[in-house]
Length: 469
Image (cartoon, rainbow, N blue to C red):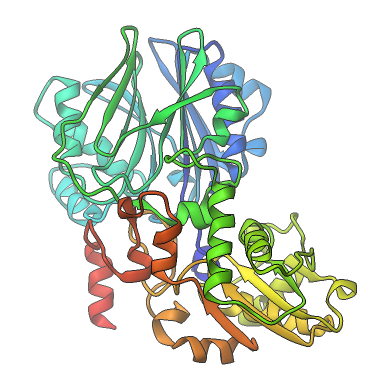
């Protein structure tokens, strides 16, 4: 059983970075990965090139644990790509750490991938029948084999033909000895931004917070279906794919991205989440004394709820930031007190109060149930739960680690039944219409986890599992 199966949160996907035309590119990639650490804590890695050779260092663990000064000194070159991983496909085994580096008849290439391929099983079987020997269980390796097995001797053509075989979600940075490339799937499910470092240098990153740490200037996002190439001739772009409906993951704005990052619309994530809280307060007001946010991701939404409702916001829940993900083990009697280790209620703030608890989303419902119990135990007379996301009723197949239908509480219970299960006095979810109202250019988002509209289909393995259920 993976850790993902033991928790009551949606899992972060992965974070990718790329640095081009910068002295000590690997060190800049290292700093950028620090800023993206929230997107994955299982492993970290960097591949760098000096124009002749691609070198790689990766290992399980946090960025600070994986890299020391000697490791970064060995990653010589003016180009680098990096990755922090949270497994959404493949196991947590060290061999699944990225970037993945391959040496084949066309040379060397390394890739770092954020997303999930929905036709991974089909492509993997095809490659294995053709003699491919896979070294990992992650779908990211499939692209390497597709490029290596393409008949065209031209790398650009081989890459394009390979990308045309992929279905699902991918934001990828790719490094060869003399070039760095970045590309997104035609729907643009997962994020990828371009920034300028100055003196002709560029940075690519899943979020703009990775640019801020380097003092880089955000230029734009890599467009859905776009391939951007950085070489000695500068930056060039092509859009070879047929235009598809944009479907950016709405959960990036609700939960995954750091609040200080900037969305593709140019609006800060913190502002968007506060607006979600305001809309939530309009849809589901509460007769209460104060508003709490579940730390840390729900705090902006709680502040927005407070401002719109006129109820004071307070820090009635404190989070212990030193609890590792591996603390919660797959045994129910241990999971039951996991929330108490991660959160603690402040009795002095809550005693005798009617409290609104704002969370960013409700997955299984177990953690919010423990928080409700904790807040009551600290003396609150009423607990009103509000979610700044609609009911999460469908799994994500595009790079977010969500449970199956059987484990998603909103897929199996009505709102009133969920309220009773978590022990709240009232429960209110932001509506899908309210979410769309807040999102800039809402038609360009993927809402599949709320409405089941899977624009890029479902993986074969998941479809079989659903049919068997």
